Length: 168
Image 1 (cartoon, rainbow, N blue to C red):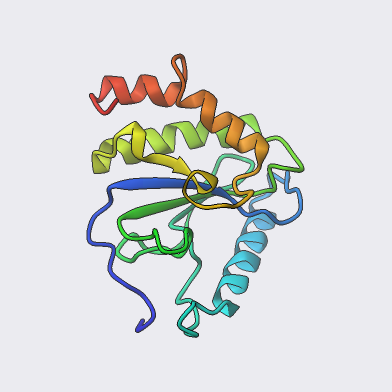
Image 2: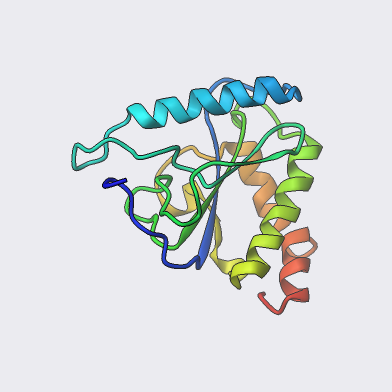
């Protein structure tokens, strides 16, 4: 717990992929095993200061079946965008979206989940980003990046949701 900072409110959201191998299983057990693998790899990482990470870096994870899993408690800052985790809700979609396309179930859930979090925390659409929009990285992969661009565009579901909530 000494390696973790309080969140102190949410004012932005960042979308990621896990970037490992392609993952398309809709089995709850397979998703749980993959999530545990990701969590264990995060627990073995060291921060710049040399301290170990306190938990998985993401607050929420969406699997290929569209289930939402809780990662790190939203009481605490995530560890998902170096030097930009303060007030930043981390949402990861399981899979490698340079090697695969997201499932329709995971994208429907991502749209709905992001809209709910935007409304809950009053996060404007302009503050819903992908990892690569904040730092030089391949994350969230080209296919998930394309989806995020579409959903935030003129006819996209997140833009429509933001307009309904006056969060444009």
